[in-house]
Length: 289
Image (cartoon, rainbow, N blue to C red; front, side, top):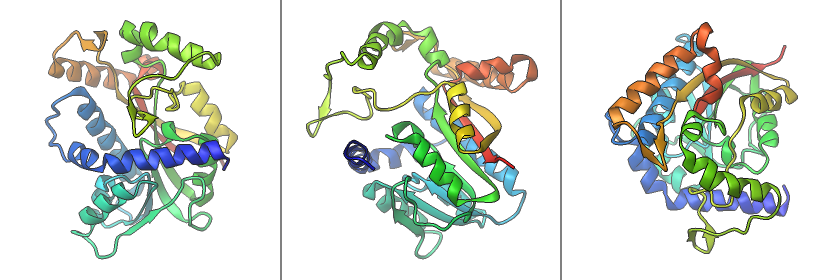
């Protein structure tokens, strides 16, 4: 890991530690979301859990959650009797997770570790979760390679990623006129970093320096293929909301109904191309034979 990559991981660790209370509160919301972002989080979680349950098929699995956050996914797996491990770079998140999981088990398996160097033997886990992590990493290919190393021969990686050509971005001119030109200038090396700072650094959450990645579906397929991994299934998390300059055209519940309708359509053969404009995806990935 070079100095820039180390600095980035340190920034991520500090950012999520400082916001551990916020994320604990967000993930503890009930199933009636007060805004579209929380709807997306619940949609993502439900789809991840469905894929894990489908693969488990009532068997007890050894599961690792990379970027385990405040432990809400791990808690679900513990309740179902799975053997779970969690790693994160943010000590504040691990602290919240330990408090939560200790209600169900003694001495939960939680470690502070970097995704590029995980302290586990080869082919150790049946399921590896990587939810809301890939987009922050300075070296995503190295991370995917490490996940493959510790995945069992017949195991699955459940991974999520955001889309740069999302329905939300395509329907709101804010992203092309306000963010798009800044992104282009950055690619050309002409963008001067400015914006809201926290502790002397640009906000990771606001992505002022464009270090948080978004992907094309075809790019992710190539990334996985380079590490001899195959996508078994792609599930869309959400679509929208359509709006103008960050203001949605429709009320929240209408946007949620619209998103759920497009998700349903995207899973059919006739409308499968809709997957290419989803806001986010959940991937079920396996090793290539």
